[in-house]
Image 1 (tube, rainbow, N blue to C red):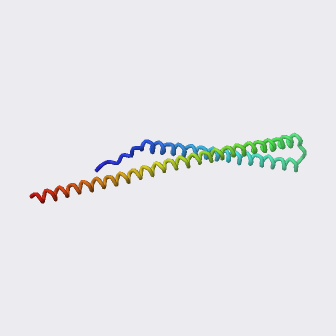
Image 2 (cartoon, rainbow, N blue to C red):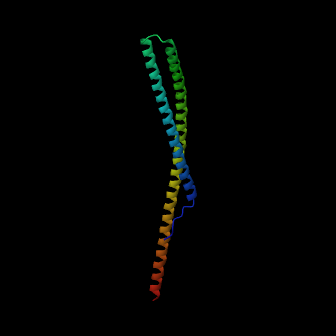
Length: 149
C-alpha cells in the first residue's frame, strides 16, 4: 500500500508552532493581568486600613501630625489605585490582543488541518482507483488467458 505524504506538512507544523506560541503569549498576558488585579486589591486594602486609622484618629484625641500623615497616605493610596487601574486597562487590552492572535493562529491551523484532510481523501480515492484498475487488469488478463487455453 502506498504511503500518504502531505506535501505541505511543513506549513502545518509551522501553524501548529505558531498556535502554541500564541497560547503561551496569551497565558503570559493573562497572568500579568491577574497580577495587576491582585496589586489593585492590595492597594485598596491598604487605603481602607489608612481610612480606618484616620477615623480612629478623628474619634480620639487631637494629634494633628498623625492625622495629617494619615490623610496624605490615603491620598497617595488613591493616586496609586488610579495608576493601578490604568495598568489593569493596559493589561486587559494586551490580553484581548493576545486572544485575537490566538484565535487567528487556531483558525490558520484548522485551515491547514482541513487541507490535509482533503488531500488525504484525494489520496485514498486515487489509491482506490489504482487498486480497482489493477484488479480490472488482472481479471481481464485471466479472462484473456482463459479463452486462449
